[in-house]
Image (cartoon, rainbow, N blue to C red; front, side):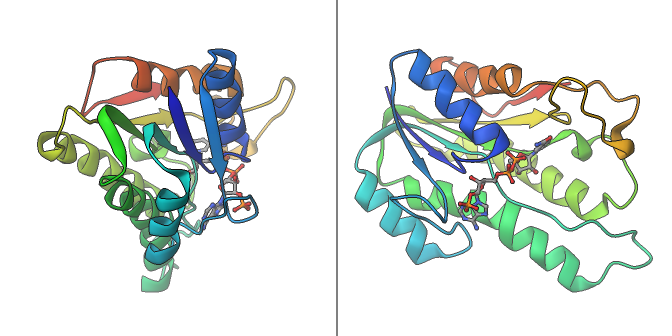
Length: 198
Ligand SMILES: NC(=O)c1ccc[n+]([C@@H]2O[C@H](COP(=O)([O-])OP(=O)(O)OC[C@H]3O[C@@H](n4cnc5c(N)ncnc54)[C@H](OP(=O)(O)O)[C@@H]3O)[C@@H](O)[C@H]2O)c1
């Protein structure tokens, strides 16, 4: 399989790269600082990445940010930033990748536990993640040529001994465990699903 991992140098993306490589897949990792480089907030940059990368069987997007703000302090700009980065960036990757993805290929996007559960200041992230999950459910109906689409929803990814106060009491996951959900999506037969790792 030929796999494009956008956000491939990140905490989750780098584990996804390793997981596919361990299966013998050819992996192209892309981010703003890689070669090939891409900025997912820029449509032309996304199109250029797919032209450079050539045919791919699986596309993973493991990136995108949404600002933290309590609703009483949130501005339209907070929401716009989340829409442009995590929501629009990953949707943009699907739109740019459609002409290049192989028959029976797959897209796997990244959402997160904050679509369903809350920590302080997580309004924008909840909205963005919920939008992504809606997009995946609906896009699965429209994709041509047997192409599938799923999302992975991780809980907080922690190293052993690491603590993030806002997630105290939440079940955490590891880079290796969350990476397997992307493998499941790319190698499986399911579409329109959100694979929760929590
Ligand atoms: N880590 C967690 O605990 C966790 C839990 C639940 C959900 N998530 C979600 O999982 C996704 C990945 O999280 P992460 O923790 O792995 O992030 P991360 O460690 O910050 O990595 C982000 C990756 O995306 C790239 N990137 C950032 N902005 C970009 C842009 N505009 N265009 C292209 N590449 C860009 C970065 O590389 P460059 O800087 O080189 O561009 C890097 O490869 C995010 O959507 C996050 O909300 C994470």
